[in-house]
Image (cartoon, rainbow, N blue to C red):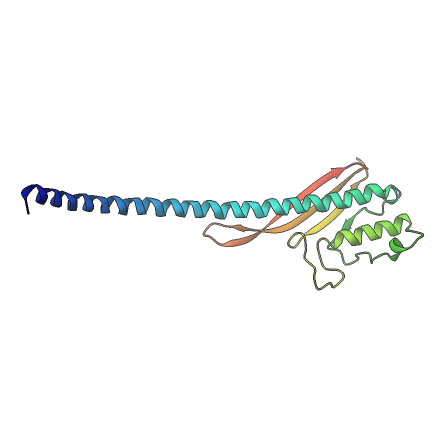
Length: 179
């Protein structure tokens, strides 16, 4: 082996050794970066779930508000006031909705409240029922002084507490309207 070839051969091992250290450092940096990306992905999924729940609450509030707007006589008579979907006195399904004669204002408000409650809990014992929001409760209240209705929905959402424990956190959304 010539001296030139031997020097090149020796330097080749030095370069490979130096490259191995660089490779190990690069792997550590890459691993830290991937762990960071996994953390961001987890946070993104959690925020996405929360945004989904807020969207569902918005849809449910819009549903009952539209029902109330279409039954102005029932609203004026106070048939929607003080309703809570967690109540033991959920109105039954009104068959007048299917009849040619239709419903009166009281029957229509009972139908509306029954249908709205079905968004939150299984009141008809359906086998394929899925609630819009977990452990949700809807409320309709009326302030006689301001003549403003408030429609509120509360639900449970998973959150992470200190120490990495998962806890239920109550979220709510409320809309105040004058009809």
